[in-house]
Length: 267
Image (cartoon, rainbow, N blue to C red; front, side, top):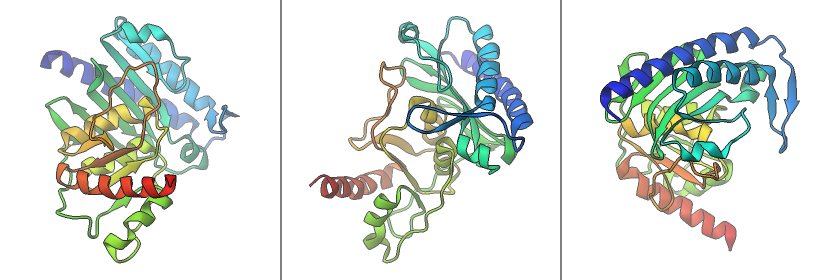
């Protein structure tokens, strides 16, 4: 994709993201209707309203792009598209419903399996992230750079409690664990340098990851599976394996610990 096309798509994502954020805030802390999905996760009328607004704005502007969203029934037609939108209308719905601020609107353009433009809006946080392929990652206009620690000692880590315990011997004390409801926002903390690594449990979906994936990459870090392979998007299966987000120097050390923990758990 030419840089001018990327810039046009980024402007479109920013416009759509700002509109979606404003709409989501009209439901925030106002007791929207809530349903339970298969599997037990909640979905609200806000999720559906934001999804509809994003679809209206983005699909009208780029009718040739495919569409993948958490709140839209999937359609195999997207697999024929070289470019598509990957959207999570509200990432962190539980936080949204609880009145917490750490939920986001996540938007990405994927081309040939990889994100090339992305916007992540934190409406209740009054913040916006964006990135383009080979164009850098930014938060509210400030260019982002991930950390690059030499070792696992004293790293700032977000992971499940079970995985956190595997790192304790490397720290000498349990690392501090801060829960961030939105997975996309959690990964964005690697891009900002507020976290050194995030370990994503198996089962995360493309819409949880695509926008943040590009932020992490453009800030100088990696998001990949335990073999080191980056994610490929717009596949028939949208669920992802265990993933690690970290700087290139730290990545292998984190994988070694996580891989060892998985082997012990499966033994």
